[in-house]
Structures are given as structure tokens and as C-alpha cells.
Image (cartoon, rainbow, N blue to C red; front, side, top):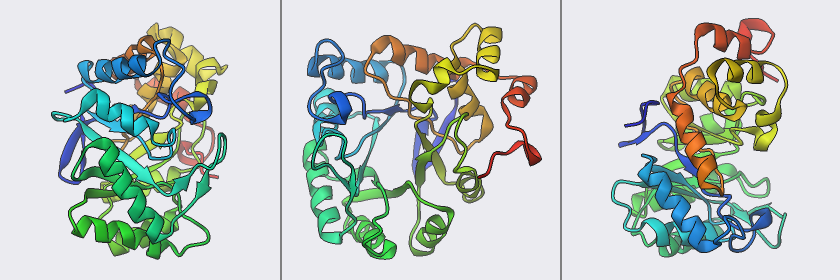
Amino acid sequence: MSAAGTITLGDLQVDRLGFGAMRITGPGVWGPPAQPPDGPDGAIALLRRAVELGVNFIDTADSYGPNVSEELIAQALAPYDGVIVATKAGLVRPGPGVWNADGRPEHLREALEGSLRRLRRDQIDLYQFHRPDPDVPFEESLGTFVEAKRAGKIRHIGLSNVSLDELERAVAMTEIASVQNRYSALDRHSQRVLEECERRRIAFIPWFPLAAGEATVAEGALETVARDHGATSGQIALAWLLAVSPAMLPIPGTSRIDHLEENVAAAEIVLSAADLEALSPAGPAGRLDR
């Protein structure tokens, strides 16, 4: 168990610092990886190093590559041996830089079969609806996940990029194990969703946990706290996520082993009450809710 402790996803228990496998693909999350320097072999080594460091939760999606991330995870880690793999469906990639929602049940069923095949699994541990489709009723899309769970093809259902209203509608239909929304020390738009996850004991998986590098160069509080701890601003951003809510399950991603090791080391950082106060936004109750 890592210094960050564990969190439950339904009946599964994982360490609270996972790995996001979007960046093991090529530039623009398209095609096979050009980085790490060894290409696919380097990505496989990276994934195996993550597990060596104690990471036992890997997050991916069929749209990463597309398909490339799932295929590399299977090559590196199947048959997984205690590693929980989460993937997603609901976005399609007609070309680099293009992400289109597709919540049609027929697409979601086809996507699930593809992920099962690529990941070499009979059941997906955590299958997440990647983004609600404005052209398809939310309940119709989510119903496809419910059917797949009943059929034994997925173990737990998660959501991604959802509003508070959509979360409430989802839990009225089925058990939700996780919500994955954009959230970081610099971006707290999903604060109310996080609070609802805390209340319902649903894991909250923040994507963009380091604000894609913005946190590592930010002026001000992050840098000040980082200097006090002899750490990087990115490590403090991760330590803050772990400290700010017991529901939090950060999944920082990288294509470099040295950066991976730096991220995992962030779980060892203990922030003081003064640190947390310094990192709190101005406003009522120290919350940024906009």
C-alpha cells in the first residue's frame, strides 16, 4: 500500500495514486508512441515500472490512439495480477486532435467488445462513459452500461465529464463507482461534483491533475509550498489532491520513467494545515465554485 492509502471502487480496493495511460500514445494522442525514446517498447517499460512502484490502478480509453493505449497495456501487464484496469467509451477519433461524442447504444456495445478484445479480458474492471452525447438521451447511453454489467461484461460503471445533474440522474439508475472530471489545484470547476462524490462515497478521479504542465510552472502558492518541501510544484499539486478529499484518486500520466517516479513520490509528501490554507482559493469557505 502506498503512503497515500487506498480507496474503494465498488468492491475493489486500489492505491489512491494511479496512472493515466493517455500519454503512452503518439503526439496528439494519435497513433503509436514516439516517446519514450524506445517507442512502444519504452511505453511497455513505463507501464511495468509503474506497477513495480506500487501503482495498481491504470486508466485508459479506447479513444487513446485510438486503441493504442489499450493494446500496449495488455502487452505490458496482461494477465494483470492484481492490477485494476479502467477504460472508457463514448468518444470517437476521426483524426488527430478531433474528439467527438458518440453515446449511441450500438456504438457503446461495439466499443465494449473492442476494449475486451484489446485488453484480453472477459470483464472490464471499471468501464466509464467518457462524455455524455448531446444528441443521445443520457439515460439511453447509460442504460447500455447497465445492460453490460448485468451480462457480466463489466464489473463497475463509472462516469466522466458529467455535471452534478447528470451524476444525480445516473445514481437513480444504477450504482456508480467513480466520476472522472477535470479538476486540479488550478481548476476547481467540478467542486460541487466532488462534494457529491464524497457524500455518496464515490471515487473522484481528477483528469488534468497537473493542468498539463501549468501547475509545474505556476507562480505563487504552489511554488512557495514546493520550495518549503524540497519538491516540485507538480508534486505539491498531486499531494494537494490527495489531501483535499478522501474521495480523490489522481491518475497523473507521463511518457517518461523519471517523471513517473517523481509523481509516485508525491504520495509521500504530507502537507500541513498552513500549506493547505496557502493553497486554498479566496472566497467563502475557501472554495472556488464557478
